Structure formats: C-alpha cells, structure tokens
Image (cartoon, rainbow over all chains, first blue to last red; front, side, top):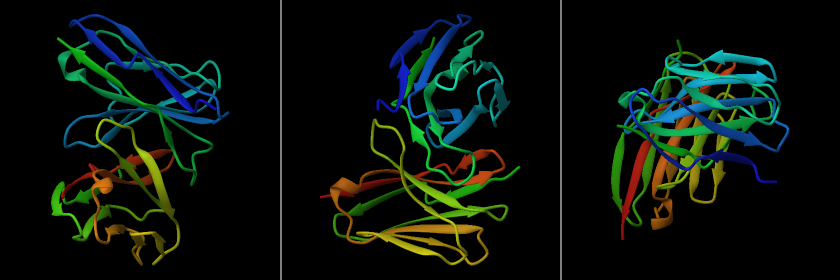
Length: 113
Length: 109
C-alpha cells in the first residue's frame, strides 16, 4: 500500500491564483481530512469528509473548497490564494471517525507571494 | 468548541534527561491520541488512550490519561537524539480530531 499520497510536494503561487492540492489513499478509509500546519499553531483542521459525497468544515475553512467524489480522493482547492495561506498542508485518513489512528500524507509546502 | 492545550511549547534537554509534555482539554474526552512528527516529516501515530486513569508504556515512553479524562501526559525517560521532534496530543470532538499546538523537543548530545 502507498498509504496517503499528496501532490505536489512544493508549490509557489502568486496572490489571486487558484490551485488544487491532490490527496489520495489506497486503504479504503472512510474518513479523510485536510490540516494546515503553521509555526506555534499545531495542526488546524480545514475540511473533512466522513465518506464519499459528504464533506464538512473544520476550524479554518475560509478560502478553501473540497469535494469527495470517490473514497480514494480528497482534493483541496484554493480559490484565490492569499499570503496568509502560506503553510504546510497535510492530508490524512482513517478507517472511521471514532477511535482509529490517523494516517498522514507527506505534506505540501505552499508559499503564496 | 473544544480546545486542546499543550505545554510546554518548546523544551531543550541534555541527552539522558527526562522529558514530559502535558495536554489539557476544555471538555471531557472519549479518548486521546498522541503523534510524533520528526523535523521535516509528517505526524505519525504513537498511541491511543481510552480509559480513565489509563497508563500505557512503549519502551522509554509512558502515556497517561487523567482520571477525569480531561488531561494527558507523555513522559520520555532518558531521552536520546532519536527522540527529537514535535509531539502532539489530539482529542476527538464529534467527527473532528482536534490537535494541540505540540511540544517541540530538542536533545543536546
């Protein structure tokens, strides 16, 4: 199993540009989520999904969209990039929402200039 | 909403010294998980605690869950350079897993 994969690993955007961060998992996990990590602030939940076709907002959803058309894929879209979205983004998955360990992807380091 | 506080934010220890990080929740937790992130890496699951007062050990690491299920701790005995990284606790809030800000551990050899 590849586990959780993310592309790209690095990305530089100009303010106002849009882009999609890709995330895929091959473990048939129901639950997937996106976090951003900023120094001193830990991991903050952006959006999550409890299954295909179902998504919900986390702590910091503004400026981001998600969709979950398949169990495997959970892309994160930045609609109009802002410097405040410079961060490291982690996608994660787990088997269910209750009491299961969460597997993280390797992360995408995004810089918005 | 639920908040998970973690202290200290940063600790620098001499190799061989002990290390402890503490996690406190504003609400009662059904369970708590701990993760480790090596520098430049991604968080990796260490353990989950479920029962009130539970204590679990993994070699030099000891994890505790408070009696009221609102706090937890991770203690490392005789730190080694391989222990460096950021340690996160995470508590479940409904469908969401809420992470503390993490404790960064640096070890001087």
